[in-house]
Length: 115
Length: 112
Image (cartoon, rainbow over all chains, first blue to last red; front, side):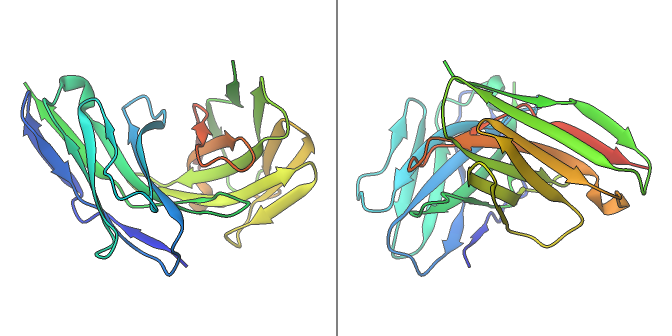
């Protein structure tokens, strides 16, 4: 079974600064996907960014980028130019490449962006 | 465009009472459907998933069951609620063979 670990329960960052959220995972699979989801106070789960394990290039979506280290089984999220609207819970998630496409989530990191 | 609905949005139920949460998806056919539970301050735990009508897979043995009576309808049920069933329940869907899941607005369940 896969496990996903987020070792930072809470983090804070000043507006306009950069913050990095950590995630490690454990799997014996070679083909899989990794995701970062954002859950603001509204509780709606929003996909922030995804990474295919077979791709060496790190994914980037505007101010969000990842540092994917496959050998180390590490998948961190960097948020640049932090905005107040980035305040939320952030979840790292793993998906095997199979028919069910089920997500395994980490425990989450609560990010507070301070003005 | 596709949309996903969940109801009710909030629910307070006594211990031992039955439960029925409903999730429906519009604008797509034959989706994969998922039920997740989120305990307070925790990550999401997959409870059930379905790849077609009448096809339900359970990930965690528990007091809950799921059914898919129609292609785009997914129901989470319990005959007798426990205090430990309290939490935030999220439904999600994905296109078959796609890696991206889309989540509904969730149902907050409090068992008293």
